[in-house]
Length: 617
Image 1 (cartoon, one colour):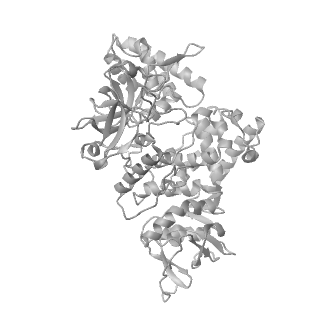
Image 2 (tube, one colour):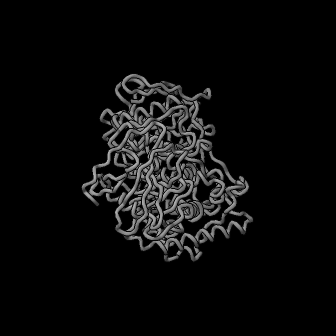
Image 3 (cartoon, helix red, strand yellow):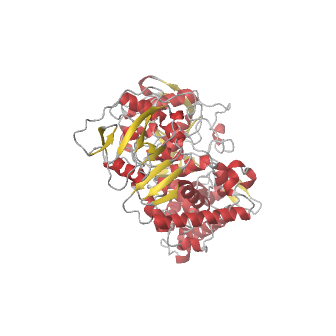
């Protein structure tokens, strides 16, 4: 490109406007030539590019309005990938259409990015041009799986493709058959092609969750192959809802925020994969939480990258992106604005931090969205899990005091007396769980709240109150098998310190939905036993002696660590404590299901404990 061209200078951008570019036609290594235009978003017709920023260095340039505009190598590659051979193309790409050196403009335009992607005629997802030989085979797999889904729905008299215009309604919930382990699709040789796609760097980025999630239409450009984003996400939803455990997807955690965004926009379709009570629409806090492990160069974008993706997220407060404040100030201001506007204490469920942070005077009640721990937050649907209430049915009246102190109301009802080693997915074996059970059994007294049903309570504590994946009937049979096996092995242990596991038992447990649920509940957490004999699980930093509290307005008990001043505590995090309420099915199956403190398990009201102010430091 002619080096004699002057450098591009951005002009001032009106508050109600944005820029888009027209990319001239070309092929191969033809120079990239474009023009930039200013318009209102609702007056422009354009496609938006979603790509990996990569290095901040700008070794390349494109010709823009007769001047040289410096750009990154990744954007140059993306523009070449989307460029048409015979006609110009109107596009939006953030690093060119926003003056990145003007922090005020950047903040204003970042606030509008949700509207930019929502208004685009199509979002072009550029996952790369090199190393995409798997593209054609993956497209064939997507077509085959989606055709299977369509045929199954037609068999149930549901026109999947017209369902958008005729909402299926609740009578269609949970009708799709569960995955059959003998189905040939399980052993299809093309599944590694999906893993190859998900290993691309694009799926490791956080910004792209909103970019794809808000799209009216999205296409994945994988080398010379074009994939339907909706077909990809429909297949992922089917796997998660009906084939989890039967088909293994590498990097599935990267897909959770994408899947949640897709399902929120296609509820009338995906309802067939889920029981009505097992799916709920994600909040802004959920998206921020699910995306902790995704890559962002600026930790302040842990909040800004997810604005607009969750419906009704504003709730009376507005977030203005500000790239001049520190990340902690951004997190503190967000938490404060959220609490004061919504009076919603669920934000405390998203606190995750390490031992160093809790002991160094940091503000422990403010979620640090950049901590990278990526634990699964202990919170479920608000409709399933309403807030825990006081004796008089009240929630806290939260207040922000001096020195970042957060005042709430609640009761301190118990103390951790046993905290297991940290559980991980790599150590979750039948033998490991049994060893923990032996420890728990040894701690039990005749006054245990679960009495002779301790073993059932143990498994229900491990599975978040009897939660399950897949078909309930199958899960309950597997749970019954686990209970019988542990009961038998416990009897054997009474006279023998060593046991030998049958290989069939190991295989059955390793493939069971019980293990899947235990892994989801306990990964990077500790199983706890309280002084009063209650079972549960808690964050990995939990110590024996930490206090169990009900904060009125939270959906789960919180763990606190006492500070020097009276009624002052550091927030360790949210826990799950299994209540002593249970039900027995018509088939005689007993299951504990309540969270301690909810309306079915408010034993604490009979104890000699009082409501109090709790000052979180």
